[in-house]
Amino acid sequence: MLRRLLIVILGVVVAAVVAVSWLGVAQVPVLSAAFGMNHARDLGMTSDRAAFESFCAQYGITRPSPAENYTLSSKHHWSGSVNVDGEISEAALGSLREFSTPNSHFSEIQFRIHDGYVEMAAFVNVPGYPVSGPVYGQFSISATSPKTVAIDISKLEFGRIGVPSNVIDQATTAIDTYLDKTIVEAGITIDSLELREGAVYFKGTWPKSITADAPNPNDMP
Image 1 (cartoon, helix red, strand yellow):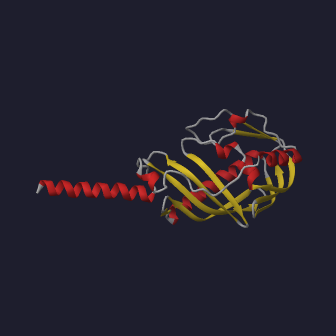
Image 2 (spheres, one colour):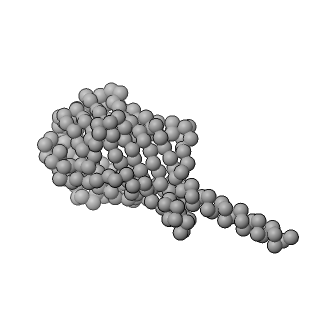
């Protein structure tokens, strides 16, 4: 009887481990890799640093801090203002170190810009929980005033699980609040903001100089 009970318990544990690995909500050695859940979805994003530098030179935008300071874990500072009216390609944006340098929460960030929406993928470690896995989402962004924007998340998946709508609502509110706060702090004004296939069109004012402190890998700005 005890032997049967142990076999049942072992079977339940094995099934649970396999399910968690397949769903991609936690990392299990060997199994997560076998199911392709140990890395972010490959969106085929490219990087064009020359295009980014050309865009900055066109409008007189500078990033004078050491290159290694520009990460998502760094505190950014903005000064001055320049008028911008043009497109910046997704490949130019993809060359930013903020997207290519991992921290304790995010790594393997990729995105593709389409007409009216963005798709994004990353590998995420959820702080405070033994949960990590690939995340994929689709969202749009629009200007609601010269100083505010709104995010609309149309799809969000953690591993193979669709994220509940109430969690999406909470994430949307948090992102909107963060972006609006940053827009005010950076002195950005928006006349027009459009997502186009492979690029973002922006018309308005942008900081002339963007500096960044040395990163703290355990913190987000």
